[in-house]
Image 1 (tube, rainbow, N blue to C red):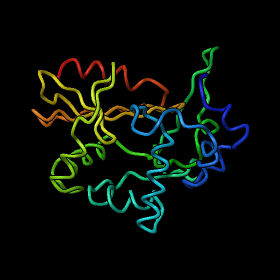
Image 2 (image 1 turned 60 degrees about the vertical axis):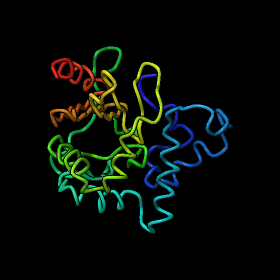
Image 3 (image 1 turned 90 degrees about the vertical axis):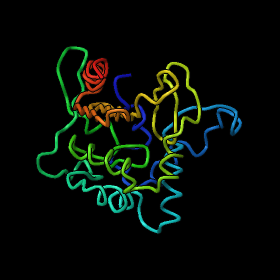
Image 4 (image 1 turned 120 degrees about the vertical axis):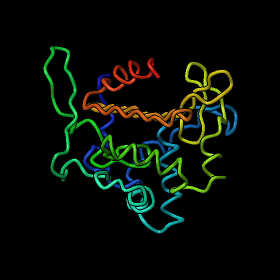
Length: 220
């Protein structure tokens, strides 16, 4: 389906503003595999991780990210904003209909993002994030290395670290990259360790970022 609106018939998107609001959507679902049996990316896992951050820190996940990631990196234009209270100069996401018309994504995504994604960022701020990560502003050298270690191979996708995709060439890291897609928004970003070049592509449509990112990636 083109968007997630079927999900919101039982759980309206405007009620999803805190991490605990997401839990009823998966709490009673059966486990797909035995823990440790195989790798499978899923948003629910990151919601649980975010809840652990809240339990250990005593503050909301969004406040934690803004305090311990955005602020140290100088990402002054980034934040976890709610769709009904967006700051000035913030782009809306758009979904293309089958007849070629467009509509905004405000009824297709949660009112506020969570630990599985949904933060608002700018391209310059993402470059600051990569700098903060690679310069050990965010984590110690040991923890940074652990984060960026290829922990598991995923067919067709390369390798996965801890929340970071990793592409190897001739057994050396070619790039670290992250991505995000929701109805009406798409995002791709990477850093190439050999040159320290960074690429950030933001798009307020569902799939536009990949097209541009792949063209740039071929030349690096």
